[in-house]
Length: 410
Image (tube, rainbow, N blue to C red; front, side, top):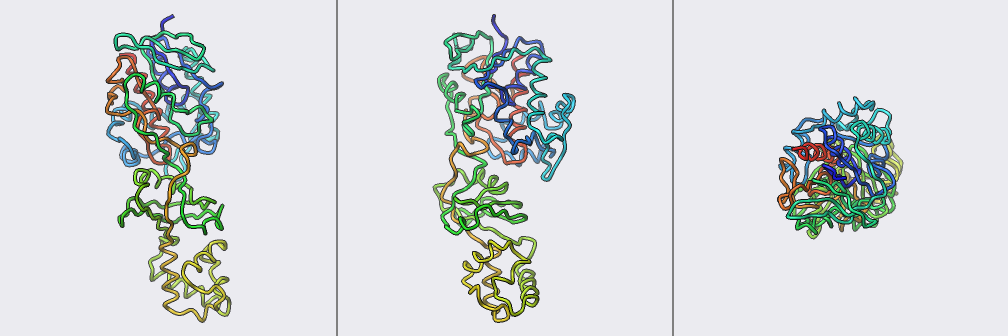
């Protein structure tokens, strides 16, 4: 049998691409090397699956950190509101949370996977699991099918590669799509970790391991210039820092890791220096006669107080009524300028997404067809596109999956 479209990869891009093409009447087969579909989708959003974002198109474009113009056609062909409508029609109710993040109302990523599987079945997509594609077959510069792991061929007029990136390798994202594309003449932008925790030089972070800070501002400073700024929640770890705003900042600074990078944390961004000083005076008055280390519980989590006082050069055993104005100024400065030195990121396998991939210059953005091999399409994380956290990366997968599926019909 010769299929109209062979889809390689059963993640969100592959599933929606396959279903979309089949809905238009194509004979489609979906090949997935794992024992089930949507393995990486299952763990996204800590198992809750942040499927998309409820923001408008400007929000999306402002959140794309790599090759945003390349995605114009994909977003215009299938946007976040259409995705929500599709999921609702398949029985998945959704809800909007902080930052316009959209989740299934059930908080179960498995509900999203079941819905997409249902969509595949409704449109008669043939699904073959445990089928690892080794090579895309080409004749006269046009795809003719694929070779799978047991050396058998699956013949098809068109092939869609939607194999994901190289993060969370245990889910099957092992860079297969890069290898196949390279064999066919495509160039690969070096895959690097994005949305990834940062490693820092300072040893005091180990004392704060597991401490989460909310409503703080973090700036990434490179060569004395602010490269990125985020407000929200962060987390101290044994190696450095993580949490939502740190992951987002990693997207902006990953290309500059050879430079000196400082993270400047403002623990009290809602207060000016003068307001913070006034607040300290009130607290010191309240805790008059107590040691400095016991006077800041209303302002800071207890675990971080010794660190802040040490970095401020203050004696933790000094009584608050003996603190001078200059010492208060030192404390205010540290509270609004807590600094960390970035030495690197955690490994690619610990990143939420992969930055890098198939060069967008070699893909037609209006169809997602290869400019090098006819009948070859790409969708999802395998392409050199990525975004901040908040559902944007999954929407990229769905939008590119849809556009490639529609384009395969033409």
